[in-house]
Image (cartoon, rainbow, N blue to C red):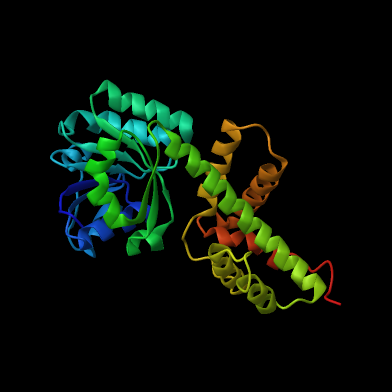
Length: 293
């Protein structure tokens, strides 16, 4: 870390809370705001260097970096409408919510209209990488603004990838999340195939690990699926939101529609807040159509 600074984190959901906690441990003065104040207070109570702030304007005033980590573009626009006039002249707004390129463009316009330096900067990674400082930043914006924000970004991430000067970060994020959701659904279905063929899951994963087809993220999901352990990481409902954003930005895709159907069914089964691995619940819960031979 090059130096410490005052950072405002707007949004105390799972990712925002993890970011705030990590930044506080790294020596930054962190002001955490959430629409539901009790949630921010619960995080701050157990985090070094983190203060829960009740008014969003007070959170951003005097902060050198303001990170928005909210559910969608509408929420970010609404919150920043109340806060943006309180930002210091040299503050950088790091927009880390997954909102899609269209909303990211509107937020960039909002920043430009108020003379605020803006980075379109979603992340690849969820709560555990955030706590470990191993997020991958997908950053779009002017290079000098990226440089100004880097001391904060680097305390949260193992990589800061400068992918463009506009809202390319949000575009890359949709592609990454579509791949993540599709590969997780595919892994669950392949485990079903293993069961029908009589292939032990451990044997299957050993073969993957021995060659170029290994994907560490999905190998972790196999363990979670086999244990039916869906502790919150990246919530199914958020994956569904992101697939819908991808669908709105691109031509229809039969694959992504199938992924969406699986996510929607998983939400309907009551696993909306569970980790993406819960897409496997439908496989485990359904009566076996075939028995291993």
